[in-house]
Length: 455
Image (tube, rainbow, N blue to C red; front, side):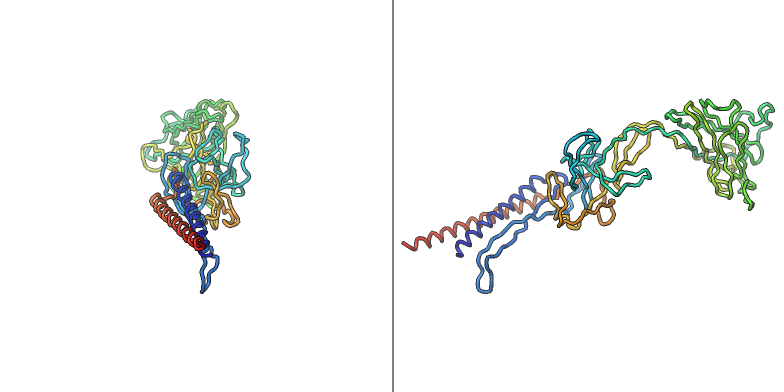
């Protein structure tokens, strides 16, 4: 019995070492595969009978020992869509079952991978080297991700529509050491003489065309400046121009109670002849100081607001000492037509589409999926995995939160295979296999001797 048991035990050892050799072979072959996780070998002993008096030969089994939680080396690459996870977690991916464009049919199963070598395919989807489609959260109108569901990320917004200017921000200092105008022409009571201090800003109409607006300032008296607003190509512009008076210092046109503006800060804004739009009625110091006007470039009225800071506070437009008009900020919120100029991934997972007009649109966010026991996931082709009962539920969360790793952009995670370690395992498997053949040979010879006893 022991001789036959020894032989069968040795044969099981041959099978176990052959399986271990298969694991080593798979690891070495995939040593350069992005996101590959090596498979180690765990040898398990099965007993036939064992007690204090006797121990009969049993057998050995080689079971795979997965290393899904062992980090591979993160390597920087030139691909702007490539990502690696530093720490625990997986990318959520799906697999195509056919179709193209918006009609691609996806497998209902949710899959996971560490292979982050994503690139954009011809339909605008982000696909890794093994053909798996990256999934993420779509963005709501509020600018926040919709965390209720995952969907394949597709870059389809290739044009950034123009946005007409609706707001201009002006931060400047009107010099207090210049003389007021000598006289106002009687023929044009709101139009001061020439030689103003001026600002010119480019704004955008409804079609994204660039238009010019000139802001001219004259000092009327100690504390009052007059502003003329002149939009170029404005079909509704009055012949005499649009005028607004801005008062500095003194009592703010509010109250009760009486509120005083500090010297050099805005206390009131008054619309004069031919001016359109709105001016504020402040109730206290710090209220927004602005004035509005409307233009028409042939596409209907376009309302524009000029923000001058706050009433009674030294922000935005001021009047302090100096002889030169100094502009600190002159900006507007209009945007011209923009064409697609590439995609980048941010460290928080945001997928940002860039346009040649300088604008960026966030279209999705890439989350990270975690499991209680990632080593119990079911392996699939192409470095992908499926959830199992043993792995636990998939927890979808933002990068760098709730114990998941952080995203490393412009990078990939290499295989966690160590070639030197694998060749050491190869030597051990080879020696163990050879030793088991010796047991089989010795058992065979002893059995032959037992048979020959009959002679």
